Image 1 (cartoon, rainbow, N blue to C red):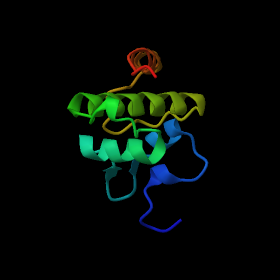
Image 2 (tube, helix red, strand yellow):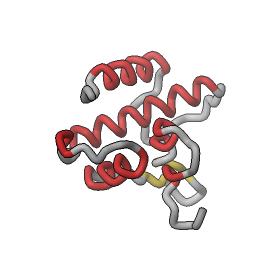
Image 3 (cartoon, helix red, strand yellow):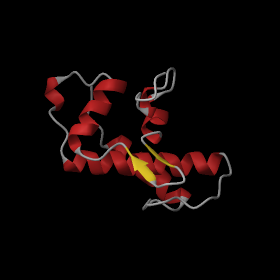
Image 4 (cartoon, one colour):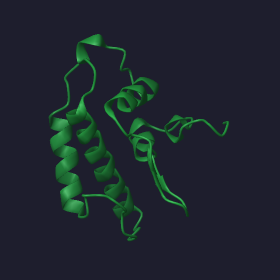
Length: 112
């Protein structure tokens, strides 16, 4: 993998892991790859079968849902790995809240 390859393009990782990898921290700051709906569209095209025009272009609501899903999945992963470090910039702080968010967002997904 070259240095410019986005984290979500790591080989053999499922889409939820790739989504969780769109944000990370280093000693300098927090880096977030999902900054606007256009970037979300590109991410979807890279990791899923998002070539369906009937789904339309993602807007701010879809970006907000993607960020909430990402934060919820990260909270669940932290719980499963017993990682109790605080999560930077995440509105999802409790495991029950993460479960509720994943279930609500999954129930509201477009049908194929």
